[in-house]
Length: 305
Image 1 (cartoon, helix red, strand yellow):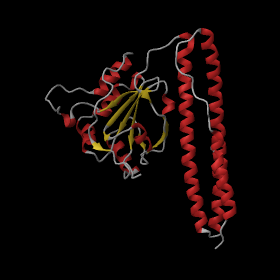
Image 2 (cartoon, one colour):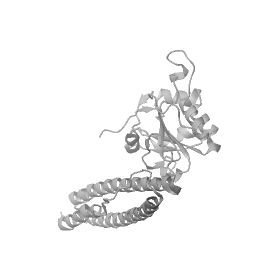
Image 3 (cartoon, rainbow, N blue to C red):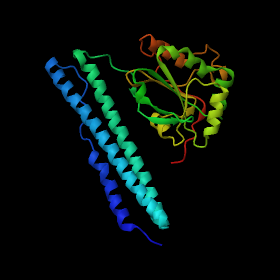
Image 4 (cartoon, rainbow, N blue to C red):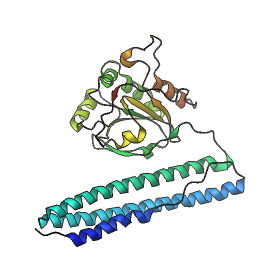
């Protein structure tokens, strides 16, 4: 059985340096008030930094694509020559390389977003109000219908992220009986609010999600996060678990859909839909008055790490 050891070592060496050479040691400038000449100079520097980050991303993507193409060619040769162990090693190398590439791209994209936000805040020597919450991590996922969704494409909208599990009774209550999620999505559809459902259940199937969407006539997609990558990035712990992202890219609400699991409050008081309240405030240009609550529901069934 023929092994292709030397080419594999060469490509592995290339893989170890392809992303390493893209390391960016520059960081966005701190946000602070400064005299106009300083602001103008920083604005120019930040513009140049944005361009450098974009160039790094383009170079990184091109280098990654070339490397993966070479690895796949090598893999095909190994398979053809029945070098099964070598083919398996190349498969693992491709997987590791893809993970490194995705991590580095996320880091560069987040740096670029931070710089762009800093530029906007310093424009005209105006320092805006301190933003609420943490910066929303960017992500790219595919819906179970095959559509690619990237958070960055909704930078001018308010975005609601809803973690769901089609088998969870508490999720089913909000869809089968209360119509909570679909009702809110339709209520705010014309107010520049984007609703995205995310399923991080490791054992879920595309068929189950497509059937669920069809049954409930969802006006929004269900995104495939069976890897759990995005769920863990946001810290989603239950289904449902809700996050609201403001137009300036900050998580301004994190928690439960309301205070009434299965339609009943614990203390017998009035029901408060936290997401409805937060969206009402945001669409009126007001800060979110209740930014954090304890989510309830089934635990997110992440894959084992």
